[in-house]
Length: 132
Image 1 (cartoon, rainbow, N blue to C red):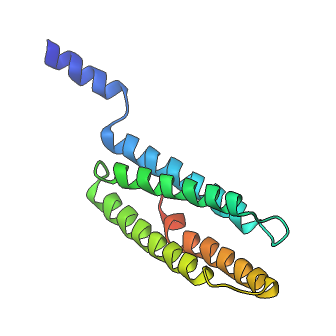
Image 2 (image 1 turned 120 degrees about the horizontal axis):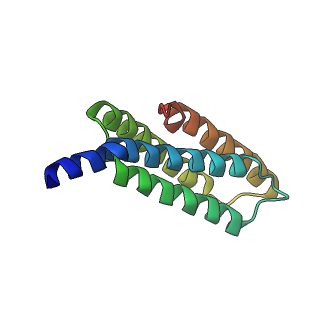
């Protein structure tokens, strides 16, 4: 009887795989939001605190994705791991490239380039993860 109730209870809720995919997709949507906010920044509107907040949110979202991966199906797990790894690598590359000291004009051009690279990196990696 207990086994039957446990089985019925799990049938009514989400499976671990469904919950993991929902967690990945929620994190993916928030990363898109953070990337969009960063992409909308200009040299006049950018602040160190704003960029740090967006990057911190992206880092937290990537952790959520990593935590959920173990419960995904093998195919989804491989897709998400690959996209996350590539996105993280590209973000680190963009951040290290942007960290050089520049004149104000150079900084503006570098900022615009870095934010476009970030948006492109998202579209080419996590943006391709199927959340339907």
